[in-house]
Length: 299
Image (cartoon, rainbow, N blue to C red; front, top):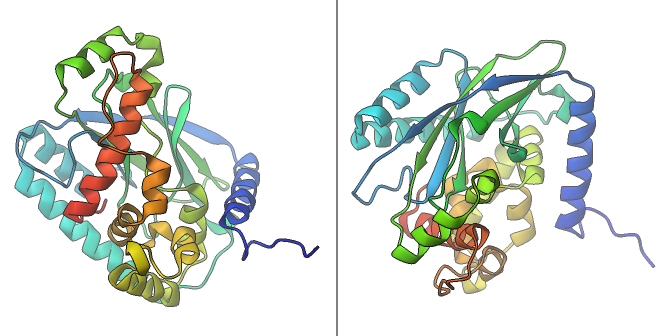
């Protein structure tokens, strides 16, 4: 029997990349830093930070962009938040469309992970340039989240790489009476069930960005525009391997593809009175993907 290769199975790509990434982290000394957490209150339909989501922004320490974003969130200035998102998306796209030479995972001078309590919700985050801002999106069921439980863990190679700071913006969903009752009964110690891991897979993050280049970006952009039968991209395996090159395109193809919908659940499922906080999070994750798909938002 022929040996399966990573070309035959996206699962093997993920497993092998995870192993390689963990080996890199083992060779580095971690440092832990606090995270600034803000609440966004918005009554309008506002896709930049969707209702029922948390968005984490990673940038170099002292970033003027993060300072401006934090000020806009505190003031409830939705137009300013939208403009910052648009500028950063344009800048990110420009960086990723330029030619780049593939690098090994260990060549990245600094990785960051985001944790909530004992739960790692983002891995393998890093800046492609010192001026870059990276964002990750998480589903949020509206339950209690303790701001002090958010922590950034950074892994620098020999102290190299710009030090990062993280801004977390959370926006609660509108809750039904039943949802409020379910969340009120949930033990505070189990608040990790109120926030999901981010909407990307580790294997796609490190391979797509570290080992990608202009040719891959063009291919993924084309797939995002054209798609394939049933809304799935024609080369679904390739897209899954390069998910985070273009978050907007990838979220659209994910949400349109039945396979991804199957993985993330059905947002229209009725809520049982015996549902748990984790059950509500599953529904919020499905709803978030649907909303991002319908609205075309990327983060």
